[in-house]
Image 1 (tube, rainbow, N blue to C red):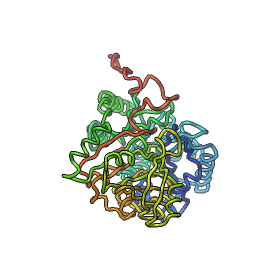
Image 2 (tube, protein in one colour):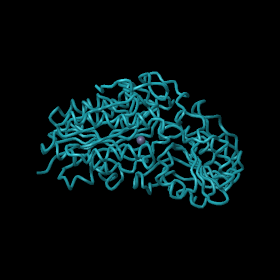
Image 3 (cartoon, protein in one colour):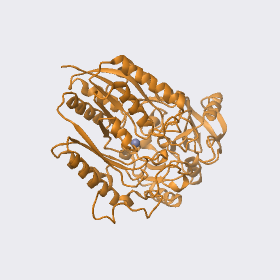
Image 4 (cartoon, rainbow, N blue to C red):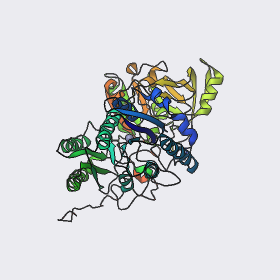
Length: 503
Ligand SMILES: [Zn+2]
């Protein structure tokens, strides 16, 4: 029996401290697709939608693709943008009726002007459109801020198990398989959500290292127990600054509420007791400089990552801090990805390939990411900023940085772009005539995702924290809505320790 299933993605990670609103143009620039175009563009990609499509044949789904959209993490989603996207999504669902089920790819940290809990807004509107009887399964990012509202609106929520997120397609497949079992009435999912009062930053949340590796081992052991359908451990996304911001454990079982709650409580206690392990992992500028001087001749390339202006945590991408440092350190045979600066790209375009330019580079979006840097350089290459990810993360997905210039500044190649994305793929360099494996020093903006592609070529990786709104130092951010006390903003915050009897 073929089952008619609608699929859609509406995904955004919102940093409310960003001065760049995530308007409709931002969604369009990152990729906005409808209907059959979704299948054409996303079949075979390592994304949730790619996983939905991949599993559809095996579980006998007739897919009705409706909407697929995401945007680079940035500021609040304006009311008119979310209204328009929801209208398209819900109209599409109504036109697709009757449906046997719905699969959604969400992030879990979207903040909108209409409702700070943007994902709850989406799920509640979808639920109201399809009715209570149609099963609804959604995937979430590992950095989701999970709330009781989204748990109530969906039947099953499935978070990523990897950071860097290389299991998006696998989680999409898992969602499709669980939806198939719901449609066929083989399972009756019940969910328990437990949230310890903590919001760790993600620089030490990579899942091949502890504490996440050990915690996910426990989660996967629980998933193999009879009656357990899914165990999700979400690290949360602090710069969303909502009432629901923070880490969470979500356990879905087949009809056994007690088991769901018991396991969620156990894993959440484990997470809480290991919270200090999420701290650190960021070098001082002096330590980074020393390490570079010590290692660079023996075993290049070294990678220095500025976590303060990470585009995928909502940084504008226009901090020039890495270039300032590299120049101060006298680095050569080095490259930086990236500095977003449309005006400098225009100046480079006017000068042409081989031309000389004097630039005030970066630092133009706000006064939180350092000042513009005065540099003279040579335009090495001009491009349209388009390439396709080699992966493993988001393999096969096209990237569009907008008009881009590679500018050589005293032996340092700087990729200057019109749009900002996190440099997570080697092809950002290769597309611009640079072989990253042959460099001595690579500068990236990121936090964890870069590791999937760059760790295999690096001899040493160091994280530093330049100026900006995306780093590990939460004292820089004026939180207003997160529930207090919360660790690590309130270091002495307690949870359950004084209680002999867990409620
Ligand atoms: Zn994430």
